[in-house]
Amino acid sequence: MRQNGVALILVLWVISLLIIMAGSFALSLRRESSVTAFIKSNSKAKAVAESGLAVAEMMLLDKDANKAWRVDGCLYEILATGAKVRIRLLSETGKIDLNKADQRVLQNLLINAPVDEERQSKLLGAILDWRDPDDLVNINGAEKVEYEEAGLNYVPRNKPFDSIEELQLVIGMDKKLFAWIEPLVTVYSEQPAVNFKVASKDVLKTIPELDDDIINAYILARVESARNNLPSPPLPMIPSLRSVSAGNDNAVTVVSEAILADNSRASFSVVIKKNEGTNSNPFQVLRWQHTLSNNKSLFSNEMNDFLVKQYAQPELSN
Image 1: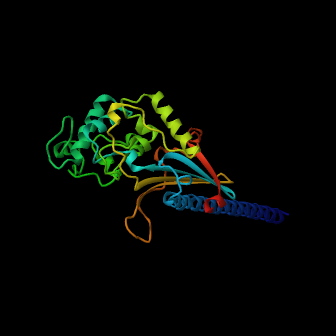
Image 2 (image 1 turned 90 degrees about the vertical axis):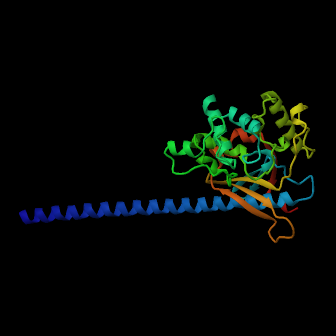
Image 3 (image 1 turned 90 degrees about the horizontal axis):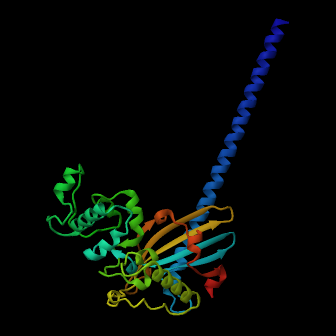
């Protein structure tokens, strides 16, 4: 009897162990299945979002004024089977060029930055010292000695910025401030002034002569003109803005975001530039980001105000 009891206990232990192993195996399979489904949906969302770039390039090349997309931040939506794509185009001339903007323009930018006045002044001097060709220190600026005293293992390049990301190396810059400033600046416009007719709302806020009421009214008028296939409205008649050069729109930021029926999402931001001459590829990619600046979704309620047109997929071929 005692041996039978021991055998029964062993059988029960084996059965329990098998049940645990089976449960663990089933859980592992479910996890692997979920991971596989996620990867599949995520890959599909990325592919759909990237298709937005091809559509944007096509619409930028369209010579029909009624079809051409604006490069002033207006938003376009494409409805496809099981997916939506939103695309936003922003001309680089509507941003502040880190290399060409003068001290006044950079100062107006930093006045609006989420940092105190003392830090604004130091950042202005440090940016000017980074891009100028000499070792002379601007007021509240920073050259080699200041970087060494701060314990940094690099010094200012004393050359123009090669990229926006290089701004993160300027003494006094941090991740939070860079995230704020990134959508407002460029190194691709090659213009000392901003083309305010295609500038975003946030860039327009850096102009002291424009208050929120003027900016909001102008942005609304610009969006309405796009919705009705009308020319972009004129700028407010402010003397300091009359001489602003329009520049050209060869370099454009394309922001594309896709959302699938299962709520999978993917987005990216890319700067493209028109190739001159008879190049087989009409555009070249200058910069590519897999995440959006400030993580601002194109499907947010705030961005709905900029939506000007919606297309069913076949309409783009007509």
